[in-house]
Length: 332
Ligand code: TRP
Image (cartoon, helix red, strand yellow):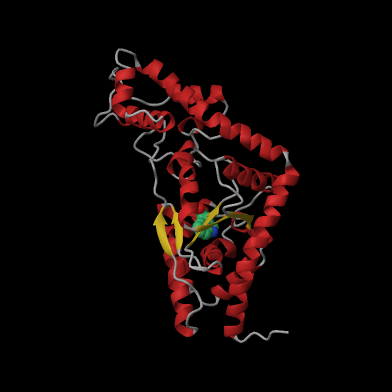
């Protein structure tokens, strides 16, 4: 809470590969959030290096991620958009929070267990303390709500535990944040296995449609989407593939399921799939165009990064200063 305004905080990994699931499920609704909350969106480059990165790619994806969020409608004048490593208080508070976090708590994090199995050659301490850096992100801004996917809920709960522990010793330091499940307008499923959620890290690239895919790629992926052996375009139990395509088509065109059934009455799946691909492209073409424009203007993008970092630093400095004072660090 700040000046009577509730604070929302979200971190995004610097990967330009956002999917139509991310778009329809979350990003498209971000502009609604900024009416209710003061919103921070942080590109978490420091979290990214817990697994090996190619430096030039990390740099490129940091720019791209910011540009893509802006292209999707996040207004940098209404929201604070910035890069984590530009605000050094994140790393500093993270160290302090490490001293208030138990080894056992971090050991129980399922993401740590999964990632250390997947990157067994590089189980570094940063991977282990990833959640304390995330807690630092959240707590620096006296955050009220953290919109996250279900996979990050455990980390937000740990953040609450750390904040409560700290507040017990040093009262009134941190606001206790609440995880909120990003109100998914829609849960978009994989095109290859419509019983699974569409995931940007799916190894089968035909399963996933990215916001930045070109038109031919989009149409090809929809053409190959797994569907049942029925031929009639209608929404029904057991027709997961068609149901998913109808939901996507409905989200992009604004048509209802009944309208879609009528529109494709007497037409086969093949024709419908192409229509879904075209509707998807038509809806995203303006986003892609805006993305390319923003990305081409590096000085604009850097100016926005700088503005965001300055705004964020103001909040971060206040909280870190308060914490250091409570801990007994000498101020000079
Ligand atoms: N760990 C989050 C993810 O992988 C990203 C993240 C970092 C985050 N810091 C955050 C999310 C703070 C919410 C709040 O998606």
